[in-house]
Image (tube, rainbow, N blue to C red):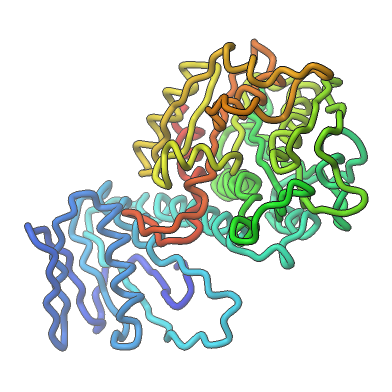
Length: 440
């Protein structure tokens, strides 16, 4: 059984006396309800999305529903998609509300007798995956006063079976970005050794638990959602939890530089020249382009300490990617066509789409500095903000390393209801990369 908020899900082959809920396909979206049953007609064809729809209906009608039994007379693969969808759709974040008036409802999922003996284990794998995505969603929603770098590290330590190291950092880009805060800059590293014979897959996540912009201060309205700027680190933690819970046969290392970007007398200043952990120097023209500074160090560590051959990084990196792609697609940048194609395919399979954007050496010219190896933002009038940010990161990736960068600024937390998510944190990337890891 999996409990999500007020809903307790159980797979069963016996109906019992619960209210019968059946899903039927038609041209229109209709609901017929009487004392003993609900008939839910939907025009949707994807059982994942149907599951999300049903969960949203149950939550909406919480006060008028008693325990229900959903008739899942469908093929096994369709049921597993439906099950995944109903779990996804049950998500809600009300942790800070004092009025939690919703009543508990038992949701029995009535399956065919012939679905096979492995249905429970497959459903358990899905439950573990969705719980991991819920961790990501919860962390993205948490306010900055409750989720500092050190508290984010505590969440990693609470994942049973995960090897976790936390190191205070006093040099490089991580230090330079975080030194303006009373919170120590940290490097959070997690490892799951599901197959020690393989080279590790490195997952890097930006962990700015609050981004004021630093001395290049954001306007107040632009600062309201900056508790979400650790979405990349939250994504990595969700993937790591899913890998551990389902014991996937991969060696995976998560590297998350965790800081607050705050203004103070000690803060990084526009015009400063800093030295990254790789030894490359950076002229900082804007302290609000801080994510790339800490990711540069994390990419260096991935290669220098762990001899990475494959790196996937996640970051709420640029507003420009939202201008380009909105809140539906993540921006994908990669130096490796095979890796990019596989990530794209996985995104399509799990309804977490990505759009590949170009990398080109000509964009590097926009990042050149007269006094250092590079600037941290492009020259005025050059545009292409998400591309130049990715180009900046690529300068810290060796040419023989397969690397993909996912700019999730538009999709980590959205302002609209998508087919599978409500207008809050989405957990984008957890199911996508889990699919990639388990199918390649």
